[in-house]
Amino acid sequence: MKTEICKFNEHDVTFMLAKDANMMVNATEMAKIFDKYPKDFIILESTKLFILACLKKENSPFLNIEKEEDLIVSKQKSGTWMHRVLALKFAAWLSSDFEVWVYSTIEKLLFGRHVQREESFERILLLQKELEELRDKPQKTGEDFERYLYVQKQLRHETALRKSLLPKACRACANCLKNKSNVGGLLIIKKSFKII
Image 1 (tube, one colour):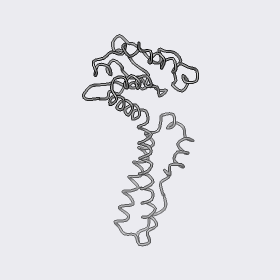
Image 2 (cartoon, helix red, strand yellow):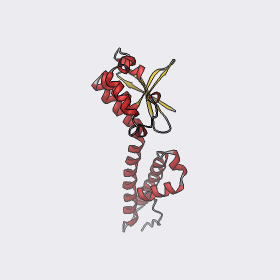
Image 3 (cartoon, helix red, strand yellow):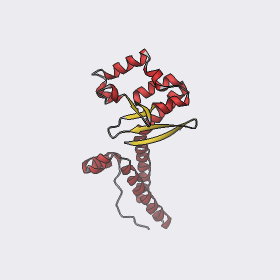
Image 4 (cartoon, helix red, strand yellow):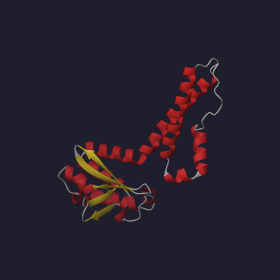
């Protein structure tokens, strides 16, 4: 499990991300910010109904949970931990501003790599376009050649960055990488560059 400590108004809140993309949030740390306790939230009728809804057979597979202990875990040393979906409900109970912060933090931690990959993909397309324009330019200069080498180096760097942002399972799968590179336009132009 990977842990990330994020700050809300100078207070630490720990997010624990499992390999299966499940996330638990330290509810004790969340409550401490507002001088409240997780147990006061857990005993609410609305919370109990929400937990029951999460455990329904049509909802539990989506949330990747099987039992109540998958939603709430109490640990002697680190406090109470809540599954991300319950942590969001808890955050809403604590404060609307805090709810938005928890939501955006979970979003960033779970999907940040995807956003980075997409941004990298856009940079790769621009670099490839510039390489093609330089390659196809009728009258090339020494400056054009230097720029071509520089852009090619940037493209290799960006391609490596995008590859590093893939999930480990995808990096190991040659077909996946091949498909990603074909779809993502990651093929480096290897035609000769002649200066006139």
